[in-house]
Image (cartoon, rainbow, N blue to C red):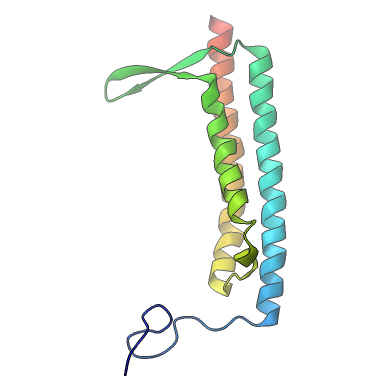
Length: 137
């Protein structure tokens, strides 16, 4: 007896239950809402980036210390968090993205809003440090 470890457990039981049509429909709805939430978060983050770039010179930096060494972070670092959102958005554009098992669907329902709030909050925090650095220089 051969066991395919990709689809079965060592005892021979299947690892996943085949998805029903209802599960696929729920996955499509979830993916649609994920895309909307990500697009809103990316647009808000990019709006903050543009606001900062119009208020302070683009070459403005903000200092930070790591391992006792002083570094300076340019304003282009503001694009990091919208870039993370674009990467996540790109992952939802695959053809198989609607095939979300129930446990993953529950996880995404909880994690996606937290991720979008993190993107917007991190961009806002970083934007405030640049605005403070631009006002003091």
